[in-house]
Structures are given as structure tokens and as C-alpha cells.
Length: 304
Image 1 (cartoon, rainbow, N blue to C red):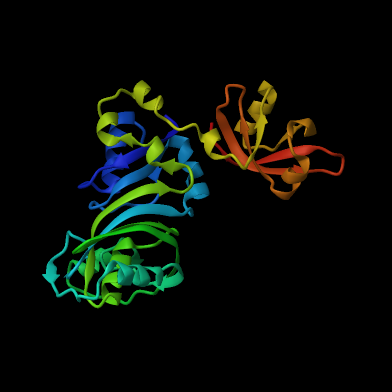
Image 2 (cartoon, rainbow, N blue to C red; image 1 turned 135 degrees about the vertical axis):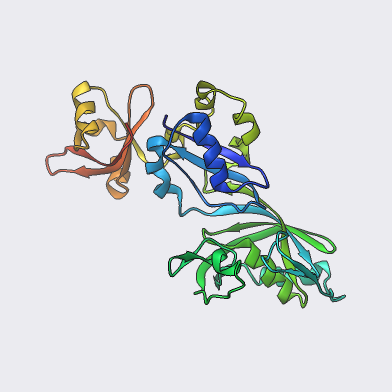
């Protein structure tokens, strides 16, 4: 089985736990997802099944959107509500105006130190393995970008807002940093991922509980058409069995120039995909143009 499905991950389960459930339901062993969500978090979790896992590198660097709730006046050992929480005072100066001013400071490019409770590996071990033993390990800061923070709401001791950020941004660390900047402490109370990359949003999610009630054919009917998430790529359609045979072997194939809707654009941006006449995605790759005006498709990933 090959496909892409955008699962809404509920609280209380790991991202890999969702993968395990989908593997059981589809009887497909090869599977991967975009952007790990902690058990505390919920929301958009795109899952790539079978040969569609070859597409993951195309989307794994994309931005993400979150609906974030921070609780002020307490610090957590894990920077979220799953750790040991210690209460601290909240200054009277934490008004909506001050909170807005402080939060705006975090917008833009910055270096962020990953939390100890994370899956980053140092010397062959994941950081949370050190943290569970009470060990603190030096972590190198990572370059991240917070593009925007909007719709800020305060209902003390909680602050809720929407954030649009780059891959690799730890929202738990952001919560801790905001609390410190406000002269108190803060931890991540609730987190919902509302968008992963450009094409995976709350508009096309499927509830995990819904999928668990379906058979394999019904699950396939929920798959996202991969052609629809490659809009800026040039589309080529295979019309002969011989061309299809060559493509299945990973060989370059030739197409007529009249199949390229915008030749100038194709020469500047060579990304292309090949589909069959039923609109099924067969391969992704790049275009090359010879001096005798031939168009050659060179596959990088064959999906059949």
C-alpha cells in the first residue's frame, strides 16, 4: 500500500505510537511521518506509507504552525505539564501590553538551545535518556526562525497565541524563555499543531479514532493525492508502455517539448514529476533540455 494520510494525533500517544497503529491497520511495514509531536501535543501528523516515504525529504524542511498555551508562575523540569512543577510568583507588571512587547522580541531568527527532554542524540544517546538520570548535557544552540506570533490572549496565569515557525523550533523552550523574560517562569501547558509544511493542515486531517474503524480500502480512500501537493512542479504524463517500462527501471525518459506548458519556467526550475493517464504519481525528478530541443526526464525517486 502506498499513500499519504494526514492524521490528527491525539494527546497521550507518541508519534511512533500512531505509526504503529497505522502499520497494523494497513499491513504496510514501510512508513514515516513529518515532524515528531510529543505525547502532550496533538494535531497535524502527516504519515507517508509505502513508497511514498521517498517523498518525505521534499517536505521535511517546511515551516509549522502551532496553537500554544503557556502557564506562567511555575517552572517544569520538562518545560511542559508532564514534568515536576514548582510555583513561583508572577509580577504585577504582566499586563497584556507588557506580554505583547516581550513576545514580539522572539520574532525573527535566533539561536535556541534544545531542551534536555528531547530526542536529539549526543554521543549515541538521546537527550531525554540523560535527563531521566538527572544528568545535564551541554547542547549546541540551533538556528531557528519564528516568523510570527499572533492572536495573543491572556487569562492569567495562562497565555495563548498562534506561532508560525521554522523546522526544529522547540515550543517548550519558547515557553520557558517567555516566562523568564517576563520576570517569572513559564511552561508549555497545551500544544496543537495546526499546519505542517504548506499542504498539511486541520482542513485535511483524519481523526486517528476514525481510521481505526476502517478497513484497508476505506483507509486508501482517505489518502491525499500526492500530485496535488506538488503544484510548482512540472507535470508530465506517460502515454506508452515502453516509456513506463524504462521509468520503472529508473532510466531517463524522453518527452515532447509541447508537454511543457511553460518552457522558460521549466528551464529555470527543472523540478518535475511523471504521472500516468489516471493521474497517479509515478516518479519525481528533474528536466534536462538538449541542444536538439529534446526534453529528458531524469528520475530521482521512482514510486511504482
